[in-house]
Image (cartoon, rainbow, N blue to C red; front, side):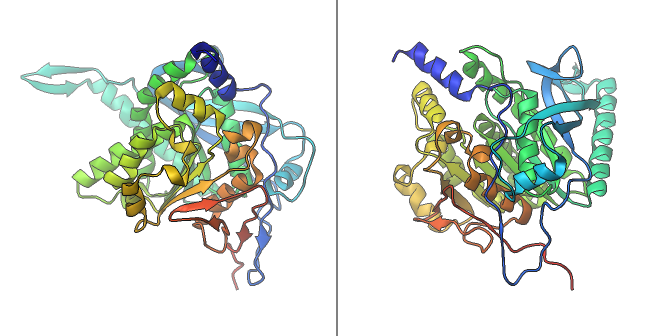
Length: 420
């Protein structure tokens, strides 16, 4: 197979099929005999509104396209399930019901609430000192206030202090990213406040992956700004950050830079940004680079836990590795971990590598929403914060930090006990 054919194959593997293929029904959570709990998805949510932050360009209507925007915008959107009622959808996404049909969605009511000034903000040099444009500073302050107010209002309306922040992968439209987050949120029992970070990707041509790689680097700054805005809100108690594929590279780069800033200022990364759980699904990151971050730079200690879902037969990451000339982190196997990393991980138990060896077809790369075991495990982690080996997450332990999950994996719901 020649290089062009491989590039085309990679595009096909990462492409967005339309209509959007809905998630599988996750494996249902079993109940602990000691716990008295309510069904986590017994009723439809009071709201189906998600917040979003994006540095995509606006399209002719209210949506967003595939090109970059120097100005970051935030707003809200609503997702409607079109082929089943909300109670039926809740049953489906809890694993309580099976169907030969998968959900279908419509994106509605996209409302851009505010837009930040473009970056870099205008400035001038006066006597060798940089002075930013005052109007841009005022516009930035106004947008920050609007974001803070909207975030606080939504947290209060939902009675939570938890934020679920999702960063989608390569060749995802704005809509597809929103649908994926909606499914994760539904599977968790509508836990927390969902926020989509949507970066410019999805241009329909076979060379788009190379451009998207640069667009991802462009978006690192805006993701850092998003995390700073969330962290500045005292109503936020915890952040669960979920990143898929190329989005994992954007997320870990942004977090690494914030970690360096925090250390330089003598601050705790965990206390400052409150990212208690970082979930990386099929991360499209060079293995050597990620080993440096996790081990040499002690990236892992900045978070409560890091869960990495891996599939050694991930076709998309296999082609990505061929294109870039190196193994991708998301297709890591225990035998590929360096001796130095293995030695370090013997004493670092907050980073978990979870093998998804039985994923097939499109689920090889999209196992976070198309593998019933993985979707169930992510959902229970979002809801409870449990770690592998805890009663809620009975994963099979292999060696060191490696665990295994299969299609029959069933979490155990032992949290949210009724008050006595």
